[in-house]
Length: 227
Image (cartoon, rainbow, N blue to C red; front, side, top):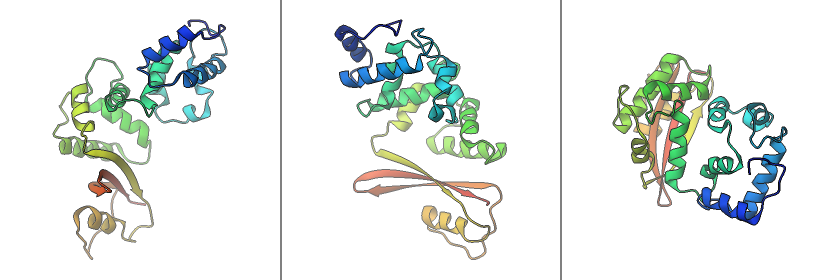
């Protein structure tokens, strides 16, 4: 399967299916192969960075450069294994392992505060300041029982994200004119507090609340902006 000019044999399909832990059906693997061949315009058996960036949805992804480092030089079998984390048949551990690899950019098996800050910087861009990013990340780490100096390994990711009680995590951004009450909505929802003398937000505030909805725990991460 190094060269995409040949068609997949039944043996090839079964081999790929085993390699991706059966997260894709045989028909899905055939469809992925057709898409792989369309992107591999040079017929070299792998998809180059320029070929990936020709996909508009990929090019505008804020993590595209980080994902490119993970995708570079992958043949079709490895490409399917990479995509397997997005399959509904993938286990929770497979999904967490993929997330860990996104943060572990140097592949040394450890994620530092700066590694996480880099990802947050990619995701937030110019919408919040560097100081605000560091504060948000520090708060999230402390909530999970870690500090800025902690070296996070895969087992830590599994411990935090693999909590069977946590079924869904939702991020909400409050946007509106200054002085209309966004901060009081946030404090009322997350802490059941309300103040008639609250001051306008400077920069951004962050708070969380976990809710039980139909027997499932949903964790809301809410950002209160100054705008």
